[in-house]
Structure formats: C-alpha cells, structure tokens
Image 1 (cartoon, one colour):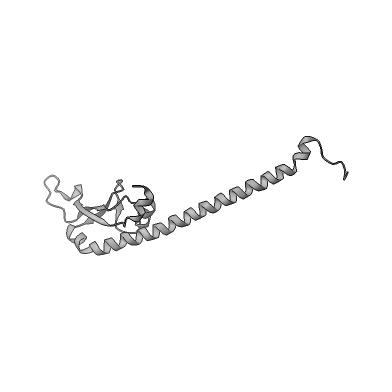
Image 2 (cartoon, rainbow, N blue to C red; image 1 turned 90 degrees about the horizontal axis):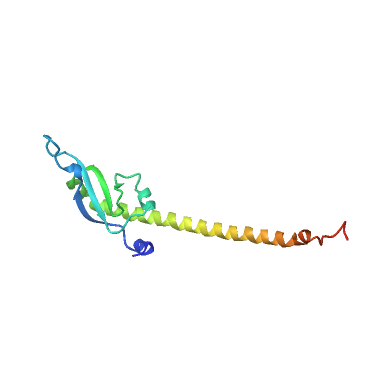
Length: 139
C-alpha cells in the first residue's frame, strides 16, 4: 500500500492494549492510572501526529500505535467515540495542510522555472557581448 493509498483509509482506533506501566512493579499494587495503547487502522503521518499535539494522545515511535497516557481502560472505552472523532478531525486537518504544502511546492517549482527562463533570456541577450560582436557606441 502506498502512502497515497494510506490516506484513503480512515484513521481509526482498531485495537486497544495495556501499556507496559499498567502492570504492578515491585511490591506496589496495580496503578490507578496507566498508559493505554491504541492500535490504529493505518500508519499515522507526521502531519497527523502534529495535529494531535494539543490532545492527550501521543505517538509511540511506531506509526501504527498511539498512546493515551495516564488513563484507564474504562475511560478509553467511554471515550472511544470521542477518540474516533478526534482522529478523523486530525486526519482532515492534516490533509488540508499537506495539500496546501503541495500547492506551495508546485508554485515554487513554477517560480523556479520562470526564474530560469528569465536567466536564459538574459543569457541569450548577452551572447553578443561574449562573442565580441557588440555594437560600439550606438553603431
């Protein structure tokens, strides 16, 4: 599947697992809050992850997983519709940003081509000076 194909797949939570800190450590009992891992439907892009920066979700280093830190499985179950909405909105906003960046890049390519064309025109107009065939004082 290409990256373009990935964007056609909706960004959704498709699985849930306990984070490693959800288990007791040493003589302590189960923690009251813990990370919950959210498996997602496709790799998340850097732009989509940036859109989630102001939320309580974070990347894990694996583009197929997000983490909801310091929560509970009960809270995740209760918030699942909200989390699905959050991912959908982040994907939509990221797509708009990516399209704007692509349009800007295309516009910059057009400007570079224009500049190179102007340079070619200038270079052709200076060809007479390089060959020594330049007019002398208006002749």
